[in-house]
Image 1 (cartoon, rainbow over the protein chains, first blue to last red):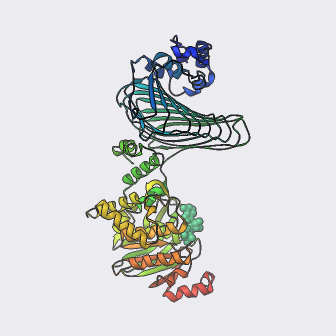
Image 2 (cartoon, each protein chain N blue to C red):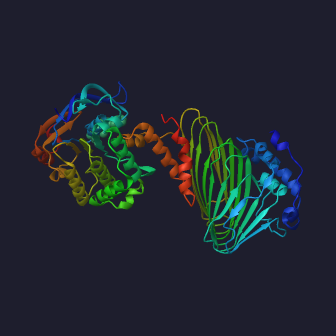
Image 3 (cartoon, protein in one colour):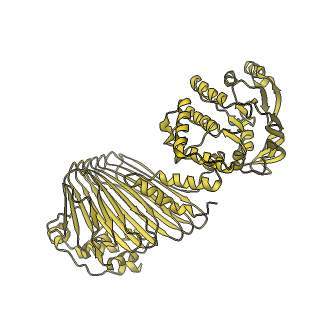
Amino acid sequence: MADLETHEPLDLPGWLNDTALAKDPVESYQRALARPARRELWKYTPAHKITELRQLPAIQPSLSGHEQAGVTVTANPSNLDLADLISIQRAPEAFAQLCKQPLLHIAVTADLAQPLSLHHQGNSWPVIIDVAPSISMTLIEDCEQEDDQQQTLWLRLGANSAVTHARNSFGTTALHWQFVSVQVHTDGQYRLHNHALASTLRRQDTQIQLVGQGAHAELTSAVMVAERLNLDQQITIEHINAHTTSRQRVHNIVADRGKCTFNGRIHIHEGAKSSDAQLSNKNLGLGANATINTKPELEIYNDDVSCAHGATIGQLDDNQLFYLCSRGVAPTVARRLLCEGFLQQCVDGPLADTAGSALVAPLQDMEMT
Amino acid sequence: MSLLEVKDLHANVGEEDGQEILKGLNLQIQAGEVHAIMGPNGSGKSTLANVLSGRPGYTVTRGSLSLESEDLSHLEPHERAQAGLFLAFQYPVEIPGVSNMEFLKASTDSLAKAHNAEQPDAASFIRQVRTLAETLDLDPQFLKRGVNEGFSGGEKKRNEILQLLLLDPKMAILDETDSGLDIDALKVVAEGVNRYRSANNGVLLITHYQRLLDYIVPDVVHVLADGQIIQSGDKNLALELEAKGYTWLT
Ligand SMILES: Nc1ncnc2c1ncn2[C@@H]1O[C@H](COP(=O)(O)OP(=O)(O)O)[C@@H](O)[C@H]1O
Ligand SMILES: [Mg+2]
């Protein structure tokens, strides 16, 4: 794999000197790039397509809701303790992005009545959001639709905090990388509502670590892939501590010559006693030319867990179709309704209304035969 | 002209070479009539309902079926519904993600479009559906949920009757709508069917038990066994069947 060999020199940022990350970052980075497990992550999307996005000029994402009491935004902070938040091993590409760009740090220390919104306009500065203990807030992300772009985001949820994170990605003409790494501390609750169309290439990496006891993560994702577009979604949830729970519901429709990859990995560490992880991934293929790669992965290192993990690839249900038709609904309309319903099951959160209509828009001009 | 006419109907499950289930079935229902079809499990009652409504997976090998003289056999299921046929399912289908209200609106709009009629405006439609739900003891909250999703058996059956009353077809086939209902739910369902009945439409009640016929009084009772109607009579035939069992006839 050629892309694994393109090791550009790292331009290490100032804040790195103050953290444990400073120990051999370059060597760790090189090792991470060479890790065999990394090949799995980049099996269907060559990594260089994503790492090349780093060459784009960096743009500060525009914010709203940041003027509320309790929100502190700092560009290029010094003195950040990021050692336990950022892992070179897990995501060397995201680490390289951190080294290359200015950094935006957002501290949230009060409950937010209004959502905090990030609007991305291109190659966004990396963003780190630190949510103080017992704080609840909503985070909304969306992006300009047309241009190549990438976003890297780290979220740290303090004990007992609750974050609802909604993200809409509906551009269809760009290379787009979205990386989110979330760390949830004791009894914290993280919810991600992801709604996306495929694009020339859209790659979504989501890494969630349930580090504190009782931490909870919930993820719903609705994806529509049409034409010759591509979407590659890689989700890893790590249950690190006891009594941690996760729920994932991921529905993808792949039509035309679209290509969709879903890799959902659940990793239950030895210390994660009495954990409970559930993942349901359903893929609907429309037509004979759609490509779907789905790979649920389970790694469990203790016996005291409950895990439900399933992936299906299927077509529309004949009984449902007949039920609708028996009420006078023409098959083309019925199929469209069923597709919409399939996605709707994973449309949720504060962006649900806009997401619902944008996701099904490609179905409107599709031959539903 | 009969409302529904079935002549010498032979039908297989699957393709041409599948197992024959209906073996020469004849049935004539006039407008204003309620017919009941009774028969043991496996006698072909649901197959008849499915074949009439055009469900894929069956092949008609001989005979004819028509609604007001219109040949149904070449129509798609949605065209049969548009022609005025309605089937209340023995096992109503769950459709998560499509709300019941959305489903009812799609059905109503499709039928209106087929008849070049005006589609109802959203507000009055919602009012109409809510009122119907109340008369059937269905919590209006059900209308926001996915079609039949998580409904109890009784709620599903009442939802079928709601659709019957809303869509107001010419010919209604009710496939064991009474099964699994307690007596109160049975009365609600029967009341709904009686409200639907008129001089212009017809009902084919498929049932396993006589009980339903105390509340929806049929004009004609047929006994189906092994894919044929082996006996027809008035409502007393149902009572006789109840007392003596099906073996008496077969
Ligand atoms: N889709 C099918 N595939 C195979 N066999 C079927 C199918 N539908 C019905 N049958 C068979 O046809 C017979 C009649 O079934 P059905 O019409 O459901 O009976 P009833 O509704 O009277 O209980 C049964 O022997 C049943 O097993
Ligand atoms: Mg049956």
